[in-house]
Image (cartoon, rainbow, N blue to C red):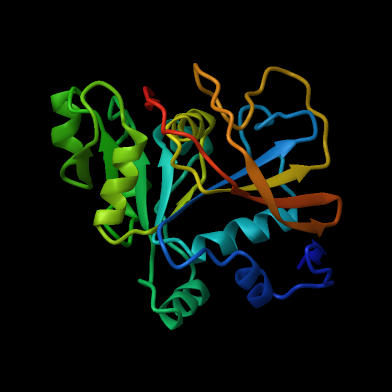
Length: 257
């Protein structure tokens, strides 16, 4: 197992999984965390996939972060591109979650305006908990009917998905700890809407060039002040944690993909 050290605010070497979980513990109230990886020159993918950028330290923290989640939130495009299956945590993680008073498994929630998902996908057929799909009310009726057999579909806007309504709907269902794994379009829309509380960013020790996106993609800029909350090191990777330090009025962003 790759050694991970804390560099700041409290130095510490060879952190255990329990220590890492403590460092990444979210507050007691509602909290929306984004988790991303980026190359040194800002690429969010290699050959179209984010998985090629991460080393063992990133993979270790990636899995641990899911343990705290009531719900894992993902854009449908990222789910397709990255080959997501059913959101099923291993037995060790299940036991840990139950000990913390959490449900054994988090809910998997997908965001898609067009309902461009395959109901026969392992995302649905292997899911330990019925997934949620957030969409727009104008989504195609035939896809809605097919996906309604394998997921709970929630309309959160007429023509685009409203991130603020997504968050409100999740919290109304008791899913207060929201953990998102992307992608850039979803992150950009949620940033525009002012509903992101935290960013966990792995800085991969590589330069990529090419035409890869940044970790956020949106038509409008959305300057959001962040405060450094922690710095870990795993080999040559840096694992950074930032929390929102202020914020203006929520914008009018929406997920259109």
